[in-house]
Image (tube, rainbow, N blue to C red; front, side, top):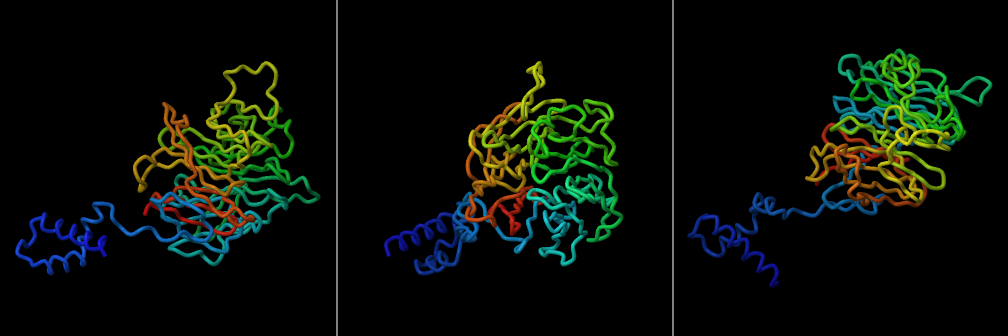
Length: 392
């Protein structure tokens, strides 16, 4: 009992050192020690250890806890938060747009689309209008079937949210490239108010370097679906080219730069800084392309990790040192990696570590998307669940 008595004595000393009730007997001091000094303990960092990890998780940074918010999910491939805290997400193969609100999944889907079949085909990206609080617009990128197809096509479709129901579906972008694989499919509004989306090479490595094609590119539109003003080619939605399959991208919250998670073939997975007019060299850079036209690679992976979701944290509600960190999902390893960033553009990698590791057996725990919620927590989707990671 030596350790317990030593601890008790230290607590008693701490209490008397604070000038509290000098006339108390030793027994009274012991009783006070057993009863608390909770605030003091919290100041000293002496709080209970975090709860055990769920069975799906092998490890997590010890300063955080993870909670399952949606169980039995059906491939929730992309996540988007509304300003009011609702989570909207897409189910790849069912074509359902779902809403999670007030701690529970809304039973009826927001909307359901008919999707084109394929191993990487279905309902992909989702985002909300920057002025969602007033216009209630929800945008999705979907692989839709074409009579007599394949080939099929992709569309960007806008819904109006009437409560938790999508109404007035309107196709604002039509006839985007489609294939069984490499459809990319992330969709986000940028700080410039423009609508950005990625399209993969549609299984044809020649297309990303072919003029007048849209495959293998980051595209930029006005909110109404017209090619954005200021693009490299007037009347063309191309923002940059030479991409194989940039499954996800995000905007740096401090400076608005775009970071993309690019899937290579048998090697060359990358994080790219996606800049206007740049070429990212897939598959073969055309002869005569000047070096100044080649885009910047933030991180190159010599062996395949299959990057999926990517997010950059603001630091809000997280411990110190997390602002401007990149969180990158590895499909192959079932991991979330944390990259500390620095430099004038916050595009220099200082270090990389495994922030969380999930059980890599089978497909259930393969990470698909990761986003920062309005409260600062990270939300992660896998094939069968949606998780919240927050500071403990």
